[in-house]
Image 1 (tube, rainbow, N blue to C red):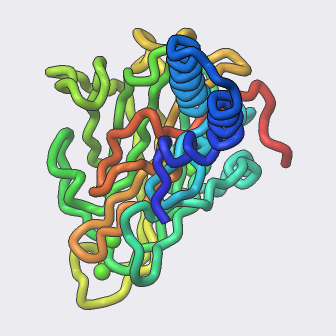
Image 2: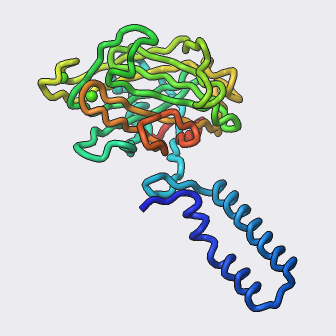
Image 3: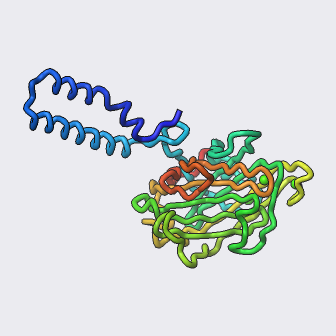
Length: 290
Ligand SMILES: [Ca+2]
Ligand SMILES: [Ca+2]
Ligand SMILES: [Ca+2]
């Protein structure tokens, strides 16, 4: 069953509406009084609609949308960007496993496990993507990474400017694309924005660009300097307790695209450019419990 925000408002309205309808039926109200009741009723409808919009929204699948939340703990020991997630601090970091297959409904859904950490210089992202057919051809910056199996982080680093966001996506070869949308998803991206100092190391189990066999997985370990977001974020590096809006997305390569994501979008066709549907991360000054 489809639910939009109006459906939600209507399900909440009957008590108020019924009450005002009852009043107007039981009392021989003057026309202008009835008019006032109608106006009050209409105002209440608008008020409730606004309240409901602020409180909760509904996705097309009828499930109420609550942004997923994640605590990014501080890395209390160095992270070597080598594609091996064997640092104890990675092992201790909380996992994100509940990726949504917002548009992909049939067939086996390929799981993802992602983790994030931070220190004074970098936001760290690590992920393990199960993948039966790994595609990775692009080796140049700002090339067609989106045609490959790729993983993307989108960040809106100031919750007071939720439409101002950045996206960086990479493949297992370490090629990446970076863009900045200073005025929201419907306005043009910044003519030129390059993330500086991004470090990516990937590994995979399988064969690249040969879909005649079945692959296992690919991994990337990524460090993104906070300085890249300094013009938008309140603090870079963040201060403990700071919150950002953020999403993690996957593209699927040549075969079985899937398009999975941490916080699910609300579009009919695949689109990750929905900053109003990003998840919420909180930077903790504490390392993860080991
Ligand atoms: Ca490592
Ligand atoms: Ca293969
Ligand atoms: Ca794939």
